[in-house]
Amino acid sequence: DAGVTQSPTHLIKTRGQQVTLRCSPKSGHDTVSWYQQALGQGPQFIFQYYEEEERQRGNFPDRFSGHQFPNYSSELNVNALLLGDSALYLCASSSGTGGETQYFGPGTRLLVL
Amino acid sequence: QKEVEQDPGPLSVPEGAIVSLNCTYSNSAFQYFMWYRQYSRKGPELLMYTYSSGNKEDGRFTAQVDKSSKYISLFIRDSQPSDSATYLCAMSLTGNQFYFGTGTSLTVIP
Image (tube, chains in turn orange, yellow):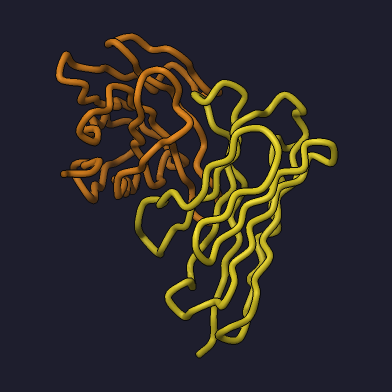
């Protein structure tokens, strides 16, 4: 049983560029949440997708957008990258009735130069 | 004021010691409480989940929630070097958006 998978594992971009990160949820899960984890900090909630709609959003600007596909996989897009966007981006999956049991993927480490 | 406060440590204990990790929170409406373990450069791994108040035990791990004090704890008995990691507490109102502490770095010395 594959757990949560994310791609790519590492990424280097320059300021102003755009990036797309991908996530496949754990088998049987239909809800995907995205988190940003800066070095030495806890994860910060970006948003959650369920039934291909954004169900809840944290305190992140509109430069952060997402999408969920019919197979429940998801993408996180970040436009106009800033140096401060450098972080570990984590995807977590859960079942739709409640996100209390969230399983995380290994993350994508993004470095913005 | 942060939603969740967690002492970042670092915490260093000898092998076999009992470890106590704690978080406080400000929102009394939180109902879902989780503990995650995160090894360096890896994603968080779910350790314990508690709904509302009370205690939960799983092997060497015990999670406690005291909603009246807005305080949660994780106890690790007979700590092992493999327990060396960062421990993150997380909590939520609805089970959707989770608020995390900054994490406590733990080292268990053989």
